[in-house]
Amino acid sequence: MAGRGEHDASGGTHPAAAYAELSATQARATEGQRTLDFLREGFELLATTRDSKGSMRRIVQWFCNQFRVERCSLMRLDDRAGSLRILEQRGLDPAVAGRVNIPLGEGVSGWVARNRKPLFVREDLDVTPEQTRSGDHYNSGSFISVPLQHEDRIVGVLNLSNKRDGEPFDEIDLERAQLAGALLALTLGATDELAGKVTVAA
Image (cartoon, rainbow, N blue to C red; front, top):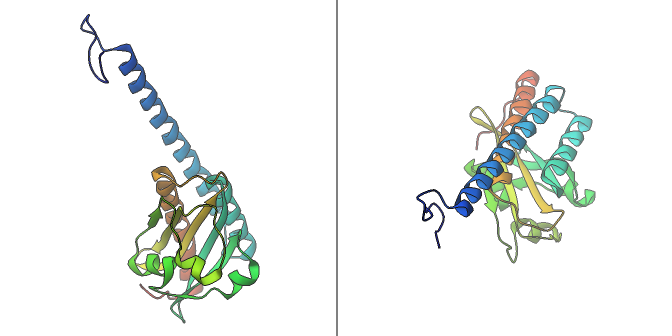
């Protein structure tokens, strides 16, 4: 039997292999279009955004809808304390969220901010730093945390967890989270500059 990419007896490409290649190409094109639509919606949303409670609430809700997650937290770097606090969130206990104060380098978010690198965990973990801090429960150990970097400054961290279907995140989710983080960082960084703030560099 001809395998993927092999030819049939007549010298042509095997129909099954050709169909598989076509399906893969169409799937990539579809995901590419979805990413473009995602970016367009993100630009449109952030174009009218200010660093206010109402605006941040709408952004976090948009993230939840786009990534189909139950939990999303937007953390802001407190330049005076050198630590991260939750600016806006969905899915966390408000009392717990209001007390979160993570120094740079500590926990998942602190590590991401300090190292300026995203953290993408696909598989379930027994315990994550957030769980040990808050005691919250997660429907999956898979999560994404990305740094929000404006020019050479860290302005915050975006965290996504608890997909509504309980499935793990994938590379496409990571790519879109990084794109969303870049857009959000641009907005927050520009707001800092207008307000005359200086954010502590990680």
